[in-house]
Amino acid sequence: MGRYFGTDGIRGIANQELTPELAYRVGRAAGYLLRKGEGAPQVVVGRDPRISGTLLECALVAGLLSVGAEVVRLGVFTTPGVAYMTRALGADAGAVISASHNPMEDNGIKFFGPDGFKLSDAVEDAIETHLEGEDRLPRPIGAGIGRLVDYPEGVQKYLAFLKQSVPVDLSGRKIVLDCANGAASPVAERLFVDLGAEVVSICCRPDGTNINAGCGSTKPAKLAETVVREGADLGLAFDGDADRLIAVDSQGEIVDGDRILGILAEDLQARSALPQNTLVGTVMTNEGLVQYLATKGIRVERVAVGDRYILERMRERGYTLGGEPSGHIILLARHTTGDGLLTALALLQVLQARKTALRDLAFTWKAYPNILVNVRVASKEGWDSREGIQAAIAEAQEALAGKGRIVVRPSGTEPLLRVMVEAEERTLAETLARRIAEAIAREMGGNLVE
Image (cartoon, rainbow, N blue to C red; front, side, top):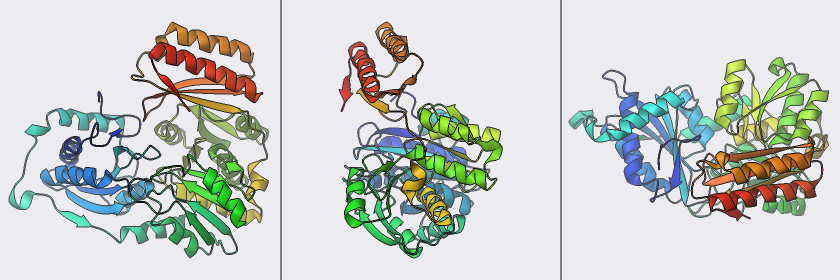
């Protein structure tokens, strides 16, 4: 797998690339690194409900216990929930077994530090160093072996945190929830019902194999249909580990992360709660949003794709709002990571305060047509040095004549190269995106993913 840690932890096909043997070694390396003197480190562990989660959880926990760590097991739990519980319990680290929005056969392992933030590159590098010599790490015996504690109270503690962070009365709201058959399934309906909403739930019955299957934040069509059919006020779609949110208005129109960001940014600015009148987006942030917010005196700083880079910029410059079109929104004044449930509550709080519908706030600006084409490749290495690819990009830039953007980037979690083209006219964006993608497929021996 090369370097184990990518932009969002360790990812791979479960039991093929991300094997239980590797998970065990990761547990030993991480547990050893976290030791402080003679004290046993405490590690909070949660997972999403995909079928390989139990396999990898058992292996990771065994590795942690074998070096003397104490493990607090949460069971099926959202990624942002694990981040919160790590901080709330004063643990030394948190670990999540999840592949987020990826297909069921994938899985991953990522860690949070005691502050609830993802581990730094330096700490991940240190874990990798210990991975190479894992067989030489200590193996305590007797009372030195680690202990495992189940913590079912974690769900109630996390729900209390969400309600306290964004107090909102949802009485009179009819909401459709799509939990992607993922980690939000055990908690989302409970949360919104507790707050007074009438809730219709779809895709909230995980069976281990249906996570993200034709549902959730990456495929909200079923949610949109249900909202219209049920006459609901809006719909909320999460991804497999519930760190993303995509909404749907009462007419079935998709409200993506950019539109949610715009609503939250204007609200925060109106309350003098948007530091430096700036939010952090990525190279994928729609130009239409950037131009619209500029008319309101709000700046958008773009960084590379990935919540890691958004968070780095936010912490570096004191910003409190950032996010991506995918619906990964970070509200840093309230949480250390993107949280789909928290974002949903913040969005609903704005709607309640303004006494308005989602549609009235979401479509105040015109988005540039944004076309994304993925190319599956055997290796992402060296794509940016291929003359044929660079020539296709240059020709597309010339065709845009300065009235649009092109972003070509490797996926941080999948064997894909992603081509994004924005243009004033959709047909032009579609044509140029496909030309570049076809050039990549020819040069890299890949194929377009429909």
